[in-house]
Image (tube, rainbow, N blue to C red; front, side, top):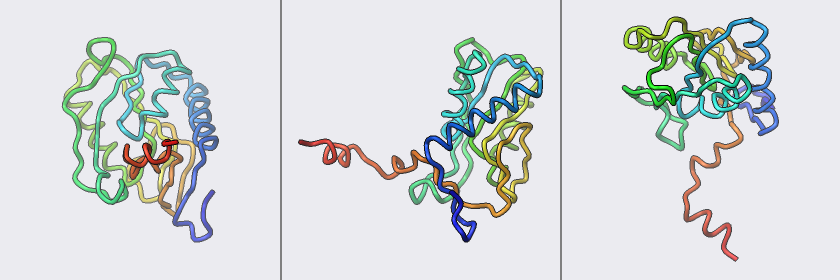
Length: 174
């Protein structure tokens, strides 16, 4: 649900999963066949996992991080892992790069640059996101929602950013 001021988008678990399913349909309808999904951790892990199940292809993971301060709301320096975790040795062939959103687009631009320059076995690379913000310098090959007002997206699991095990012990103590 988008707030009236257009500054916040609140997404339920059902809406989140519906977006992933719509993304799967867009990818399928393009006719493009790929060998592996490479998701960017953390935001791309949930969509990447579900898409790898739907398309029955291996899931590889590359860690990136730029939102760490203020419970994940303040963007800092971008860190990109030097290694990709994949169940099939080296990532190769046609790869679908998955993240949750193209916010400024800088993460996706830098990751794609790194993949093209350092992973020669990748023969074709396309990208997929759930949301693309109007300020994004990057346009994914596949995207479900364009957000011209650039709202902050409140994803259904963001409460865990500030949850600590002590909170759970208190919550679940009888």
